[in-house]
Image (cartoon, rainbow, N blue to C red; front, side):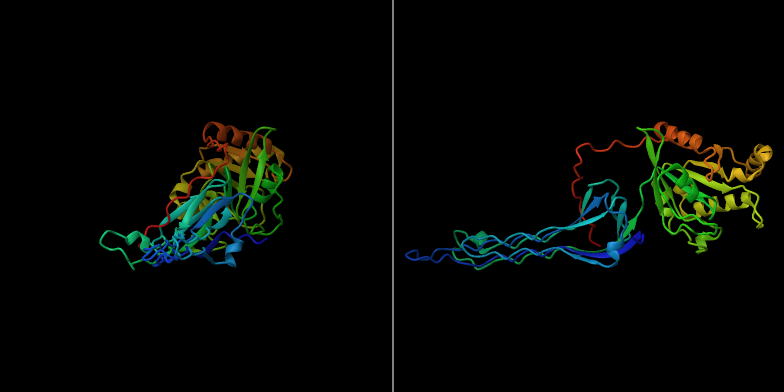
Length: 358
């Protein structure tokens, strides 16, 4: 299935039904009086986060979501039936934004979480409500209110504990294949990864974390080079970034220190908060460096780069150093970035208010 992480939709709540202007007419009961019922409330459009959905592809083909309108009131004090709510299921991690104001309407970051995107209109009042001692035969009634209507932008931000960052062909996909059951495409040319991939890393039978692999960045991504910043949003929910750098002897004239700095600069241009996230340096393809020279090569890179944080030298191809890295990540997540406990009841959150007018 094609991975789609952006879409625009129109949500239209149902109009309320009109109130009825009716009078009771039965045999042997003259002047029966008003008995017009109220109109039914219009249906609302409600979004629900569903962990069984992984992409917004459905919203590329269905763009208008319209709830049912309420029925009109009738005589004999019959109230109109309310319109049914329209349930829209979206992937966990979907953010809704009002396209007019740019306001974030909702961020569904938990399975089962709900939000009311457009609220149905109230039903009109029947003439029964207008009866009084001075108005015995009211003919007044009110019309149903229109339902709310909004145009919303949907943006999917995948949920992961750890994000992989690096140049194309730095070995991110090979790494995620080595430490998880995910099987992203791997090849010896740039941009083999065209969409985010998620993998579950099991450290032992009771401990695991989720890692996200996104397409590689290149210098100038802020200006649209390569795939640009298109997929960086998927790293915004992570607790830790692993910056993979290829330190193998390469024939092409590439400076790994310059490339590493360029990636971090692109991160800063995109989002300061993402730039400020904890970041570890992972020097990959160490298997291609002569064993006697590995320690010196790693030390030289760290010195030239001016790095003072955690450093790991690994080979994603043969697995060297990968276990030590995954255990260190697990320890960090459990101590420095504890994840919130899940709601054991499994109940969704109550639907919140739709966007404010204007």
